[in-house]
Amino acid sequence: MISLRVIRIDELITFSSNKTIDGKLCITKQKAISIVNNPCAENKDVALVTAWHNGDCVAFLGVLPNHILDNEKVHKIYWMSSFYTAPNFQGKGIGTRLMNELKKENIDIYSSHRLTGTYIKANFKDLGYLKYKIIDFNNFRTIFNKPFFRRPLLKMSIFNRNKLNYQSNKFDFINIYEFGSEFEQFVKKTTFLNSINHYNWILKFPWVFSKDKVEKSTYIFSYQRNFFKHFAFEIRHNNRLIGGVLFYISKNENQNYLQLSNILGKFDLKELEIFIIKKCKEYKIDVIKCNKELFKDKFVLNTTIDKRYYVGFSHQKNNTFKFKPTFMDGDRQLY
Picture (cartoon, helix red, strand yellow):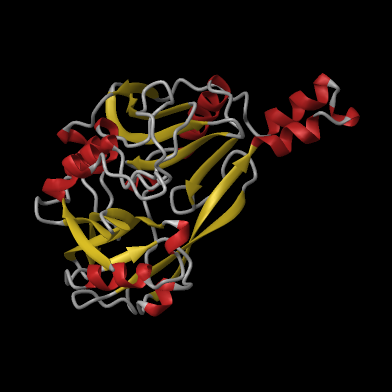
């Protein structure tokens, strides 16, 4: 007999020590602390729906409260942040039961998974996909390691043409640990409504940590990295604040990458590009990722496009058929 239990925000930290029958954590303590401090969350918001068999947790579905702006109105939505069923209990309809239980909360649910299986059964609607720009430095290293490209002068001419050696003192990039209220003027009105409080939450309460800082766990929705860190910089021109940038760096055995989460303000993006390239050199980055909307024009280097699908279920409050996301901050913490 399978029984279901809903875990609320105000129960989440206490619940965080629970594991599934096959030893997987339903949520890590650091992720629970982060979600509790989410500026969009309220104490009685749903955080997890769990399934139990003979006193053991066999499946769970996690959601994260957020806000969207639709027709100039703010709506509360819930992003699916985790969905897991223990192997011996898969194919028994438990995922569908979890989804149906979540729908009883009378909330709008959105996901970044492709429209398959349980999502189809739960009447999710396909919202299309968002495009991400990918800059893979490994491709350039492969080219430059070929005999024809080993001549220093040829390499130099190529990099000069792409302005990688371009030096500029136009802007000052100053490392900060939180965004002050003066940055509110730079926050863009996008579908996914954020604020300075939201960005500061990202900086202060991440749920991905470097291996030397993370609790030892078998949680599969917040990967442990060899190195993980968010960075925030204020950008000044002639000592005048003109914007800011938020990004994170993630390193593991296979790849080191930098993901641009958001750019605040309007200014010459070439200056920011050069700054990002320097950070890539400093941290030995292999790949840069960013939403296509952040850099509508070509980046310093040629880019490839990656697609991320979005599906949504509109329960009552929002019209899923009209809802077309055009921009998603990578900083929802779904890494």
